[in-house]
Length: 219
Image (cartoon, rainbow, N blue to C red; front, side, top):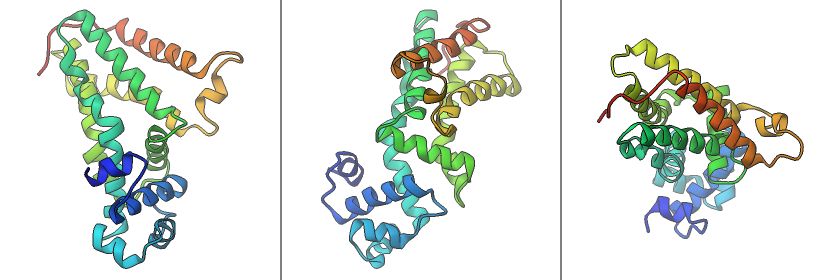
């Protein structure tokens, strides 16, 4: 079991795993800027020297937290375009990508809720390493969805793809930013949250399908 597997199993045993779990908790509670290495040490019951030994710096530890959560929660989305073979499978892939992304951004339980909170912090008060986080974790996800878009818009220029990508992204990421949650604000009384999110996902997808249709597979 590697460090990330140990952390995500919920029962870290090694010193690295304990530090990573503690750092996740504190970063999710306070964000990068308001988190101190000493607070992480207190949560993990280790000294500062051990944190520096295993992770070198608070920034490196923050990246390690993102990496562990990304591999568990977000990385599976990157394979969604590979399932496309025709129009029906393209629509299914779009629905899968949108709904899973909503699951992450609107999550109330870890590990998905940890990702949502960190996304919220980075959008609201970007960390000192926001550019590195964007390039390493957010950009691959954006490129994945743009790949799906190019299957419907093979001749589109970068501006067209960007407009479709950013507008869809905005409708999803708002769920990670809203306080109180978007679900609590807009879900009708008596409607289960999952049912409402299913409807939101379908609403987003219908907007896409009204204007776009599959043309060819893009490797």
